[in-house]
Each structure stands twice: as C-alpha cells, then as structure tokens.
Image (cartoon, rainbow, N blue to C red; front, side, top):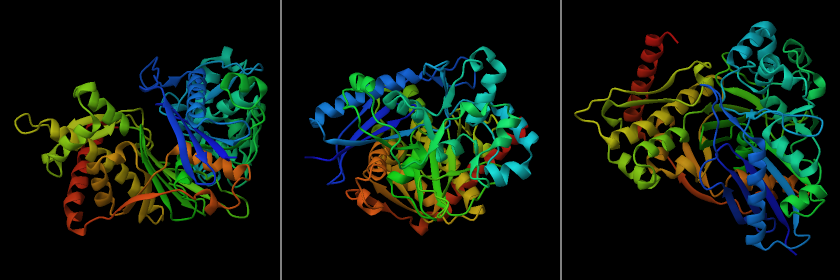
Length: 501
C-alpha cells in the first residue's frame, strides 16, 4: 500500500494541493484552483481583504482533484500539512463562524496603529523582545478591528492566521504555532512565550489567542463533518503548519544558519536562517521563529519582502495584451533590450506599503521614460530589473545585519522561470542560485511526513527533491549590473526626497 502525504498551500492568488509519495519523495498529483487569480477586495485604497470561505471552497476542489487523479485508496493518505499566506487575520465567533473578511498580508490600513504601539512599547522592548516593530502585522490589524469595528470585536472568540482557519475547517479545533504567533508579532523571544506586554498595550484579550503547538506535530485529525465535505477519510492527522515563507524555505531544505531561500510570486522574498535573534533596527526586514526552532537549538528566519513583485509582472501582462501575450513572450521581449533598459527605471512598490521602505507609501513609478527611444521591450526589462533591484536593496540590509549571503535556493516557478530575471538576480546580488523542482504544497506534504513520524530524519523527508539547475554569476558582468542598481537606487532616493516621504 502506498504512503501518501497531502500538502496544502493557501496563497492569496490561488490554493494548491500536492500529493507526495513518501517512498519515492515525488509528487504524484498536484493542482491549483482557481484557474485565474483569486480576487482581492479593496473597499478603500490600501486595503486588501479575502473571504476565508473562498479559501475553503478551493481547498475542497483541490483535494477532490488530486485524490481522483491519483486514485487514492482507503488507508493510503497518512498525513496532511498546511502552508499559508502570512500575516492575515481571521476572526471567528463561538460557533466558528467568520465574523468579517480576512485582512490579508498586503493590507496597509494598520500602519499608524503599529507605529503608535512601537512608540508606546518603546524600541528597547520591541527590538530585543519582538525582534520587530509591531508594524503592519496581524496584531496591528486586530487592533484596527477593535478600534473601528467594536461590534465585530465584541463577538470574537478566537483569532487565527489563514492556515489556522483551514486547519479548523478540517479538524474543528482552533490552534496555532510559535512561528505563526511570531509572524503576527505576538511572540516574546526573550520570554519564549506570548507577549503579555504587547497584548496589554494593544488591549487584546489573551483568551482570543489559540493554543500553541509545534510546527511539526499532530495538530488534530480530520473530523467526520470535514470528511463528508472533502472526501477525505476521517481521522487523518494534520501534522504540520507554517507560513508560506518559512515553509518555502523548508521545502528547499533551508534549515541551517547561512542557508537562504527566495521566491518571486505575487510578492518577492529572501528568507535566511540564523541561530541568533538578529534584527534590523529599522524593521525593514523581519525576524520570525523558523519551523525547526527549539529551546535547545534555536532557529530564526529573517525575511526580506517586496510586495510589488509578480503582481507588477501580471499587471504589465494585462496592459500589454492580457491573453494575447504570454509570460514567455514577455520574457523574450525584455531580453531584447540592453542591460539597464537604456536608463528606464521601474520602482515596483505598487502593492501596499513596503517594509523595506519603512512602511512608507512610495508607490510604483516608471522613471526616465523617453518616448523617442523606449518601447515595450525596455518597459518589460525595466520592470524585472526594478524588482531585482528592490530585492537587492533588502539583500544589502540583511548583509549589514551580519548574514552571510552566498548561495540562494528557489523553486523553478513564477518569475524564476524568466532567464532574464534569473540572470539579473545572480549578477546584481553576486550569488549562486540553485533551482529545485518543488513548491510550497510539496514542502507542506514533506512537513506532514515529519510531524506524523512517517519520515525518521530530515534527510529522509527530502528524498526525491531534485536540483534542476545551478546558476553562477560571471564576474565580467558585475560592474554593469552594479551600475544598473546604482541608477535604480539614485532614482529611488530622488523620488523619496521629492515627495518628502
């Protein structure tokens, strides 16, 4: 009988499921729903919300598809793992009914609330204890609900992150993890527990916070009600949960200090692991509990995030023809422009406030446009160079923190499918790039295998993880890409100064 593991990845663009054969370490079925991107509602400028029940709808469709495709038989599915978009807020009442749409990761309404909490708590507490400013994270979003929607706040029984919500729908139990609470800025790293001081300062009820479990552990079992809705067998354990960036790092076997992972989906990220609680004094990059953290062997993840990454690329596709042009055609078009796009610069910060910009509303800007020499190919190349430049900006912050950045791992997906993007990334950052045949759903499945005891060791869990390609920079291109970055940074500085941001 096969030993199968199911991984679910709850993104803001889509929900994906992957069935992994534990013996071969290979994915035997995978599917993402919907075919087009899930809607993100924006009732006001800077707001971003999604309906948690929409995630659940697509989870059920994904599960049905992969079970049917793989012809899963009774007893074959051994465990389920869940990865999810970080920083979202889900509020439910005593009947586990959603009280309002989820305020998701790219929503910027709570920036001022986080800044006030940082001032009230003081940097001498926030930085060594929380390793971050409360910023625009989950705790600040919850405080916004308390202040602006008291009729909803009065009905809150528990608050959750998106992955906790899906686990609740599968098991009927409401729990969370250390890494989850740290991404919401609820975790005190010095006290190794919930930050009572933050809860008091933001007037958040302690009883709203769910029970905490390790990322790798049996965290409930599929209920009979969920079994009827999903077609799963009742009793299958949920054995892993993690936010998308810690999980992406895990899916690439990034677990040791000095190892790094990157993604370039809707947002772009670099996530590095360290064994010391490092932090950026300006909270431009953020430190969270990594999935393999323990008291005896601490493990932290430092996250650099650029919200305006794949969303800029998808916006560009829409304005350049939508279904009449493919991403492959766009990549080829951009490759036809010279390095530096003949001075055209794209500032990609058009998807909410950016942490590396200290949560300031910089926005997206196309600068230096010359109508006599620039055309589509320059715009495409400038967009990709602009995204990599923004990641490089954050990369250099991480280096200043003392992180060693030499080899970066990524899944062969999203913007890393673009040869132009890959070449710009390795040369501008002067790093080796390893591309693997994995994704977040596969990582969640491997995590479930560890949590349920299907895999005896970490190395056993990564059997079947295939390295597809290694890209190394050519030193002959260092100067020209450094010039591209310097021009981008100069334009950014001029923009900030002109707008007094």
